Image (cartoon, rainbow, N blue to C red):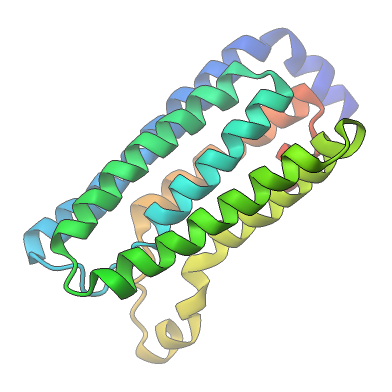
Length: 194
């Protein structure tokens, strides 16, 4: 790992920019889900959780970017919040049950943000970056694993259409890039998250 770090370190700015650009491009894969919603004129079979999770984790990662004083992480998560908010608004327009599909999970996301940001204000600065990084890492892993909640149904029906391919494919590419950037920064949470 140390050897890879020393090889990549001179390219920190370039890798950070590439990570930012490709990650923001990944966020546009949500437009494919919105296109499917528009074609069907319904959100049936499409969950709002990727969009709600994108906003929630994006806000929490903005705080982490401030801790790290890292512009790439900040820009990416600002884009995540903006784009996922737009997608969620679009989802809302076509949802038949806004309470169950949008309002209820969004209220849980807002509560989670309030609790985490409140914790960040109360925690000792000496341990905050580590503990907050751990917290956000766990939440990000849960978001990334959320499509697996329907795994039993997917296996029994032999239909994986509930797992959005564009999000999964782009997520794999983005994960690899952030792994490289985490190695450059020697940031264990970025490396472990991937």
